Amino acid sequence: MSEVVAAIPARRRLAGWSLAALPVLALLLLVLVSLGTGRYPVPLADVFSLLLAKAFGLASSVDPTAQTVVLQVRLPRVLGALVVGAGLAAAGATYQGLFRNPLVSPDILGVSAGASLGAVLGIVLTLPAAWIQGLAFAGGLGAVAVVYGVGIAVRRRGASDPVLTLVLAGVAVGALLGAGIALLKVLADPYNQLPAITFWLLGSLASVNRGDLGAILPAMGIGLIPLVLLRWRVNLMSLGDEEARALGVETRVIRPMLVAAATLVTAAAVSVTGVIGWVGLIVPHVARLLVGPDFRRLLPASLLLGAGYLTAVDLLARTVATIEVPLGILTALVGAPFFLWLLATAKRGWA
Image (cartoon, rainbow, N blue to C red; front, top):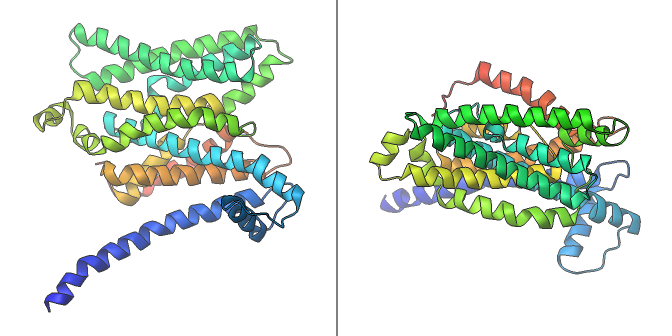
């Protein structure tokens, strides 16, 4: 009898690992489909054998043209979708936990608006692509720094709710940055610069290459490490500042650290792809409905779902029409109705 009882936890762990492996396998299958689908279709068996051969340094019998399409054109784009989707979803889950609101997205503190202003300025000044990405990255970080500075100044004058102060400061700074973007669009060349600005603001993975991935991966890693290490503190901070401090969490130190980490991830993603909305809003919400509000499970679920969601949307963007549809349009068309359906049918609360 004791042997049977002792075997129950092992069976539960095995079942848990099996259940967790299913989304990973589904994501891998989605990656294979995405690599093989496009104007030049490549069979899934060829894609799999090609990736396997390259992973082990072996020669592949796949057609050279197919190898070029898969490895040089589609693979960087698919990897970019995985990294950016996972990063935006993780940042969204962090922001929602810190601000105790499932309707919060990564751009609540103006990071997307700041990155957009930096990129638009680079386009207007006709700077190289690397400079445009650098300005976008710096603009996103600078916008959140300004928001935090305003929040600190307001709290010193007697504001009692730091979360509400940050949100309101983010709304005001975001509106100011939006005005700057509109002014630059008016001043831009309507034949060359304005179309480039509009396309960048709508978001796309079309121009992502290996160099871009190499540029953003360090920032992504640096931003995600604190989120992983401090994941249990996010649970406590979602209870409120007073309760978190009573449980031993120094919110004045942890909150800026987590906000900086999530902002770093978001700014790195936006600097390469442009503004892609809804990923950081809807994916953490769906993950919360699936695994609950515990951030220790919510973070990996958001990473996995975000990577798969943006990969699927990018696949749809380059196959649904004869021309490529910007990701920002599709994420809104897919995300908004789905989010409304979730709000209407969800039975589980936010926390």
